[in-house]
Length: 272
Image (cartoon, rainbow, N blue to C red; front, side, top):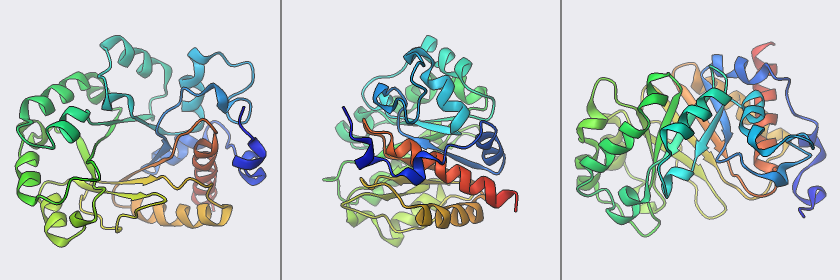
């Protein structure tokens, strides 16, 4: 049993926005959420106490404007799963997907053209529905910078077509944080995922012209003051590009509450 008094500040418990807030914020090119939704332990602070688990995503999508699906790191969804996810969510809601570990951790970006093409093909129905957010390629911490390998990987036909999905890279080794990396990402309109964890912070460099990506993974809850500052920062970015941001998901609902509180702050700013 989680200790909600420890994990969930009262200011965040009171910050759930009305159901139209997520749509309003999405219309401003901001898509925010967490990296998962199937957590019974988010009751009753985020999910209503009597809500059955099969309706979690439906409710989640009334409160937040996006989700990052980590499931795809280990297994690809069936078409039935994707159809059900699309049916359960609203027209403005966006799904982002983490790339399979076969691409990022086993092959480590090498000789991956067929794997990337298959990954994109599996998600084609989401893409064609206009509901695909980002494809996140998260590299392992022990993978040091290999600019040539990155450039070759980004030249894969599935990532270079006119209808290619928007992509982001999360580097977890500091050797990648240099201008050579950023130049390659810019050339291919790939976003540098600005990730914040307890152990590592990515420099805030925006390398794609159409989108940007944030993963806010700090273990402790963000304060109302920090979330208000985030709201101004992300609104400024969203004036020129789609802005995707995902808070950490755990058994406690802190990340979901951070996300809803942030959307509430952005909604206030949009109406002032």
